[in-house]
Image 1 (cartoon, one colour):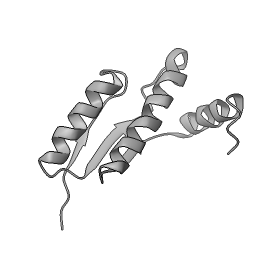
Image 2 (cartoon, rainbow, N blue to C red):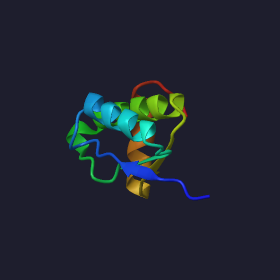
Image 3 (cartoon, rainbow, N blue to C red):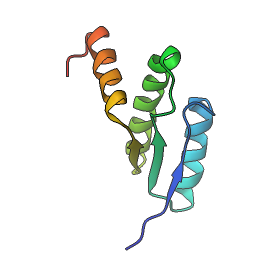
Image 4 (spheres, rainbow, N blue to C red):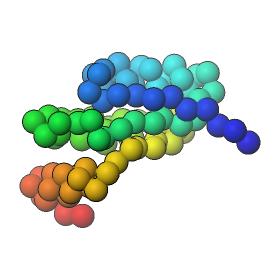
Length: 89
């Protein structure tokens, strides 16, 4: 069975706008949210990572799955973020 998805961009819209968009997509039968963490720059990484976590939690709560595009450098940034915020991996 094919499932439809939508893309959200953490650095183009604020979290509330993305949540509204996800809500609308869910009402129309979309089941997947795609986003990317690659385009997030270092100066705002903490904010966008927190937005990403909240977006995933919200999406999962309404029954949607999230797919995120990452690369090795982003995984290092996430590890560093979790370490400095005392959230051990």
